[in-house]
Length: 404
Image 1 (spheres, rainbow, N blue to C red):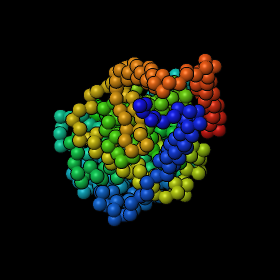
Image 2 (cartoon, rainbow, N blue to C red; image 1 turned 30 degrees about the vertical axis):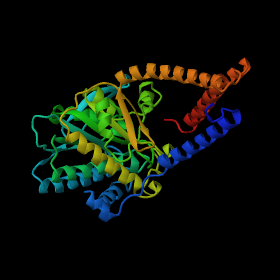
Image 3 (cartoon, helix red, strand yellow; image 1 turned 135 degrees about the vertical axis):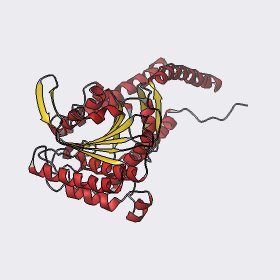
Image 4 (cartoon, helix red, strand yellow; image 1 turned 180 degrees about the horizontal axis):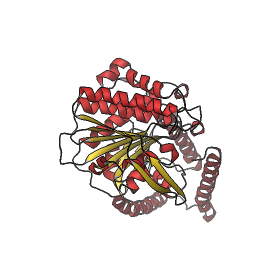
């Protein structure tokens, strides 16, 4: 008696495939387009985050455009400096460097010579261990001249301000350095001048927070090592894929972040986290509080910075430099392994494909059915080619409408 298995008819396969694609598509849209609800102030305080105070800080520094070397920029800088001084006055482990001395000359993109006098706000929170290297946290507080800078990079700046207060209350294992830097929009100036300050030699790892859109879910743009991506997994809603890193490597993404400077000039390992939704509002007056919709995007980056930052500063080893391969699964957890793992995964996948193909052929033989005519075997390569062309077409249209 033969086993009663599901029929591999064209009708059955088509129905199952269509239903599966629709369900996966709707699920991905739900996960990536709809953020989890933000907590009440009471629940946020239970997690050690003063959401109302952080929101007030964000509203204060994003009232008007505040580009580097402008009067509005000086107002924002003075406000942030006063806020970190309030923390330093309460906790002896917090030290501030109001850096208006560091200056540097460098060449950008091999064509533009830049001289800049720094105006970064540097904060050091002493760790319990003096022998371990520090962890650097970076975000820029200047905005584009044509934008209010809520997502780029007000939310990143205030999330670091919240993290400073957290580490002041709960001393981490490693020392935490914070570079609230200025002039990023004018050529990554703040990260370059950081390397003229003596504190830079203390750090070997960094987390950079950026904004390249308006609200939405932050993504792991780039990572230096698989070990650091594993630290990123400690947030509740990890989101990222190695394809974004490859896009930077191939030059498909023309935007630059401070990651290039810290990883290049500084030789540090790090993570580059950024918002990317609503790219059309990037560097415009639409990058404002109203277009966030609610506090959900802000809460997401506050929580992410807290989770990942706490893990980075309370882990002893960050020495692995193996290039990572990673992707998130439905925004719930992240698969991470080194490039060595990919070398093993590819041949195993090829072998598994052969085994599955032979198994299906054996199944057809077992059912006593005649092999399909040779003309039907051309269906799969034709469908594959058609799907690749369609995907390439829509990607090209997207890049034209909303270029990176």
